Image (cartoon, rainbow over all chains, first blue to last red; front, side, top):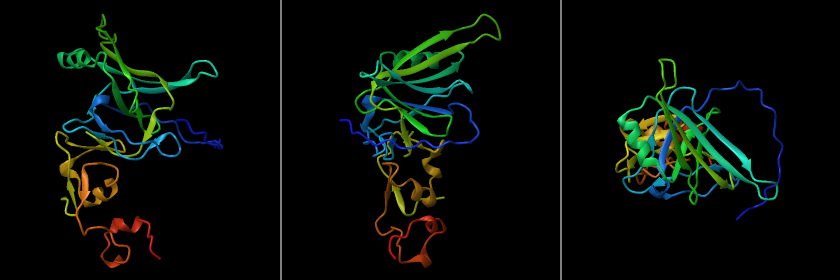
Length: 170
Length: 72
């Protein structure tokens, strides 16, 4: 259920602009036992996500400066919701990577990435995960892209990717 | 580097915790880290009788000085 929260001021910040996504952890939504309730601000989760017995978040390494977390409003005013997206590029094509890709198709995921501002963000929630897409290109010459674009995305969220301040079980 | 005030629970199949951008293996978690992580994970449990006491400041660990003192 939606709670109307009063608007507050956004202050200017003069900090340097940091780089992109620095890590990515993935879990299937059905492997989560407890997805904590969001804090009063509507965007922060400060309690721990508890996976089912024997399950955990797994790290997926990716090429430097290829990771991003995006969210945007979708729909017309009056029917707006939020779409969430996380993209990374995983270089080279190997049997190990492709085996993970095959397992991920049609999967329903919750993914965690540390964003460019140093915040751990969680895409997906207890009731709605993010889907997976991939696009592999071998490249034709040495300087061509040789690897796979990974994309986790979902639409229809009522919240931005949560700010997760607890520890991830890995 | 050993947990004396906490114990690991329900950590089957896991190797550590990822917190503030760092992956910490379970064997590297000591009491100091555990004090910070307790409440932020389901795998740490405080052993009975090891709660930081607000009244026994002489016995408090160095990191305990950052903690809020609720008892005046």
